[in-house]
Amino acid sequence: MLQTGNNGIVMAFVKEMPPKKDFAGRYEQSGVVQQLNIALGVQTLLAYHCLTALLGSGAKAKEELGKIGGGSDTVDYRLNIGRKHLMSRTAFESEDELKLWAPLKLQMDHGTPPCAAEFTKMIEAETEAVRLISRAYDRAQRVAAAHKAAADMGAADAAARLELDYTHSSTDVSWTEACQIAISADINPAELWMEYGASYGKTFEIARFIGRINAGLEAKLGPELFGIARQVLVAHPCGTELSRVWTRLRELLILAISADQFEQGLCSAEAVAGTIRIARATRELSVMRPSTAVP
Image (cartoon, rainbow, N blue to C red; front, side, top):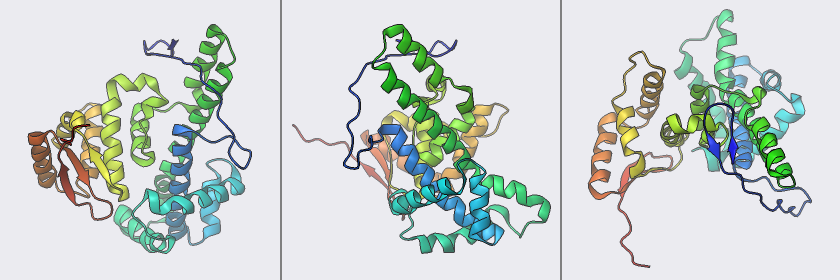
């Protein structure tokens, strides 16, 4: 068993076989590492086109993205990953569509063209998802390497190694930042920041659902999350950090689906213990009834 820090969160540690090499001779990325690598690439591509529209050239956009870490070679690598997965992780059918969308997004998010003093804040806003996912990716790689190394260690040494990488200060994020990672990377951050799981695990899951909707992807919400969905739907900022996050999630949700429509969908799904489904691109809401098929 592994206890992370002084938070009382304990996880089971099971030794596992090391991963097999793929056809190119490299170890396959597994689970959350692969998910974050793809998400980082897609978010880098989205940010690149927004920054190009903002700064006037792709070279300047790459320069800003390179400041996040890794330099130009890393940016090019991430852009290639983003291009490969753009259509599977967003509603865009091509990069050309993304190029047309980027200036419109800037106008929606920031209104009239900014003065020089506002540029820094706008750049930070457009690269925020990349910065946070980059930190999550770093932690995921550390944790994956720790699990691989721990497989050959005794129990005490393995627990110490895992404790180190699950709590490494360079990859710390607040729980609100973790919620942003859930939205933009479609993962539950409690996999990497276990101390947040008990208090915010369901908030992270509804954030993933809303993030998928806003990305234009198919999204499904099961009965286990209907309670938290209702709390988000009626949320108002009332002084607590949690209420403010729920309010922000509600704002993101109703950008795509009206509150009344979602409320009706919740009622219909609750009546049949079904699942809410939001269609890719069209964002059409439907209710999937539970299967009655007998195995």
